[in-house]
Image (spheres, rainbow, N blue to C red):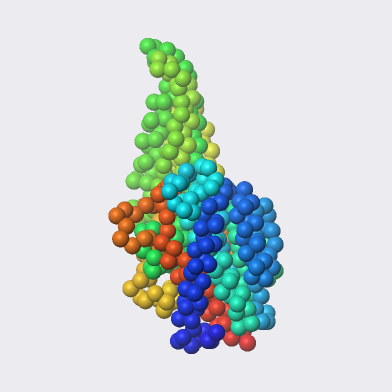
Length: 406
């Protein structure tokens, strides 16, 4: 393979990636047929291990279904890691696709089958060139991104050590961009998430005599309204935050005042300072409004994923690589973050790296079906593009950094 600073290097990587397109499609469809929930990805994990064995890439089980593959180059050097999430969603897929889910009630509706396939494609490409680069590459196949979060337990189990990872890369397919396009962002990209449970306790009475009780439903309605004012009146209009109450449950009959209401929701923010403020303000509003009505209130906030913050130099590496492969007009430098969440953020708290978007939208579609939709599907032409950008970024990093070290 040509050296990293040779103009033909990136095109050579792209050509090799496209040459394995048929294999990539086969792998993706095999994974798509066997979607499994978080921490139960047994068939998925077994298939990945089988493919790594065929590539002669050693691997170990990190914890549960997690897998860490390690590809070593011709001599020691820096280490790049690729993360691919493995779990699926509890969604029933239409059965008219030739590669539709065989597991009733589950579907790869968030593109994790594509993420795994791209990582396996990078492994296959780099395994064929293990004598052409120094350093090592890790492949982190992670469970439970959609539920409990598998990144943190993998890190705690040592996936970023032995050898020490110097750069970590991840991607997510997005249907809003057609295949052949990519999107990157420097700095905060995805938000932090906190799970919220509010329990309002009033006092039951007959609906005809409301003065004898404390209506937990009325109290909850006031709390919900007031919570929305945190974003509009308690934080700067230049900051990003959202509070959503997604579920409310209370009451037993139409003519009885509810003595208890349970509300469940989420808080999304883009900085740790704002995250702490929001937690404090939510508790203040809930408890004080409840007290004003003569009710009591318990607020339980469970921290979830942190803010995902992309490293500048890592993002510029992927951006430059993508531009060389796709052309500048097909690579978007995103300016605004979003308040979705991604547990890849845990990896980026430990190591420099970047998380980017790979376009997977199909051309000439009448409608774009979003992630987490039963109709979601990808244009499989995106697979070799993802492989090329990831593999070329890793090789560029390894060869450049190892030359610096030498």
